[in-house]
Length: 252
Image (cartoon, rainbow, N blue to C red; front, side, top):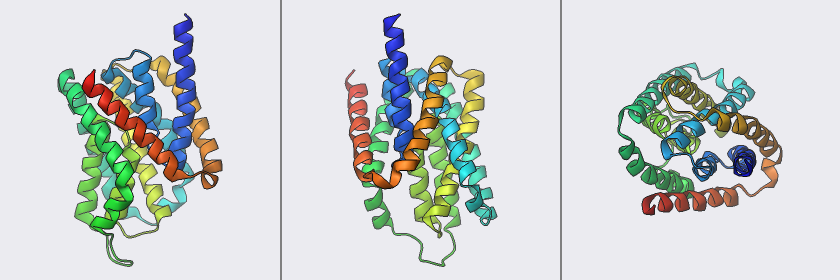
């Protein structure tokens, strides 16, 4: 009984930290995944539970930034379709492929997330961004969001980081409006995973109920203090934790 309460307390604390880090730097879901593993959940169950629990944070973020979506209907439509289709395929792959494939692939996906988070600014400089006033790179934007959404449906860690990187690279607009679109696409992906996983995946609903309110609260608090905290430092803390989880899953 004591162990169960200890696990619950861990999820409450990590859920709050995850929400705060998502608001400030992104990648907070990479903290929740190892916490779920620490409670004794198998990797597959931890993954689907994490994906379901992250959903409400995207809903709140998308609603709060809805005004920045109104003047980009074509971009929203194309990327929304790509996100919905990609997320569905990712979920189906997770359920259809053997568990051994997930166990083998996830460390690489976690490591990829860590690398992208650590070097996202450098990668943007290497690839360049569309010039001001230039049209979107529509094909690259749509394909990129589709691929990122397949990844998000299969393993949701750091999905927001990948989405915003693709948007910045392929679309010409202010960071504020692109961030609003990122939140919208995250909400679509989360809605798809919630429906699919709720129907056919082994979600730990007790863990979800522990994580959702604390993640939302953490996101609210994190948003309030975001301008006072060194987001770069927080991002690298998540990077170190993600790299450690990847190494642990390879060696275990």
